[in-house]
Image 1 (tube, rainbow, N blue to C red):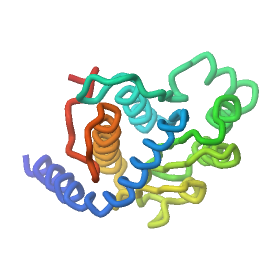
Image 2 (cartoon, one colour; image 1 turned 90 degrees about the horizontal axis):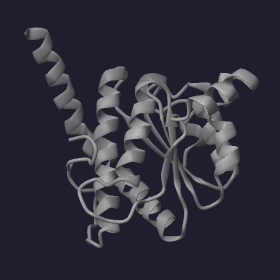
Image 3 (tube, rainbow, N blue to C red; image 1 turned 135 degrees about the vertical axis):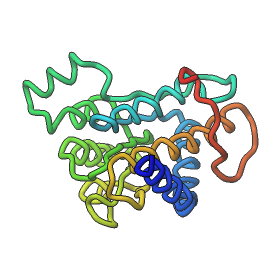
Length: 207
C-alpha cells in the first residue's frame, strides 16, 4: 500500500504544478478556436499511449465534451490500420504521420502531436511536415528529452512540456491537459463565454 500511496502522491504533486502550463494552453485553445472559425481542422497523432491520447482528443472534439453543439472537425492519424501499415511497409514507419499530413493538412489547420519522449522520428517528421504546410503545430511532451521537450518540440509553435521524466505521469497530465483544452473549445462551440481553460468535465463516449 505504501508504494501505491507514493505513486498517488507523485501524481497529485505533478498535477498541482500543471497550472504553470495554463497560459500556454490558453493560447492553444484560442488558436484552435480561430482555426475552427476560419474553416480549419485539427489533425493529431502519437504512438502507443500517446496514440490513445490523440484519439481521445479527436473524439472529444468531433463528438462532444460536455455540451450539445456541432461536431468540430478533428481526425487522429492513428486510426486506419490499412493506411498505417501501407505507409510503414512501402515507405517506412518513420513516415506514417508525415505522409498523411502531406495528404490532408493545409494552411490554417492545426496539428497536435503527443509524445512522452519527444524523440519519436515519426512524430518529429509529422510535425515538421505540418509546419511546412502552414499549419499551427502543438506538441504535448515531457522532460524525458530535456526541458526543451526534445526534437519534436523544435517543430512546435506551442509546446506543453510536463515537468516529469516518467511516462505514466506525463501521460496522466496529457489527459488532464487535453480535457482542459476540450472544456474551453467545447464552451466556445456551445456559445458560452470563457477567458481561461476550464475544469475537467465528462467526456462524451468515456462515461
